[in-house]
Image 1: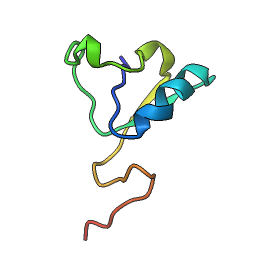
Image 2 (image 1 turned 90 degrees about the vertical axis):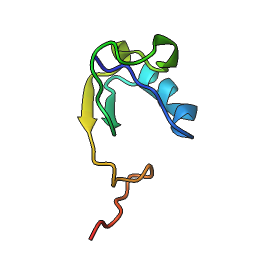
Image 3 (image 1 turned 60 degrees about the vertical axis):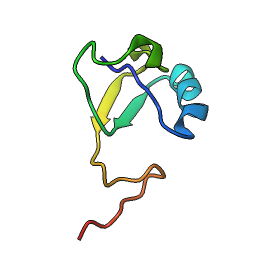
Length: 69
């Protein structure tokens, strides 16, 4: 659990930082069932991820939030 795939520029430094960090907390838009990801699509193995925090799709990649109302 914790295998990560990336979109857009997150793929540039995300995997490197996850491997170098003492603790990696991944904020994710979607958590899928075990075995749902194609092993070839996994960029960062769960071995390097200590925490997974699901966030709403309204959050932006830059860490801000869009107003929904």
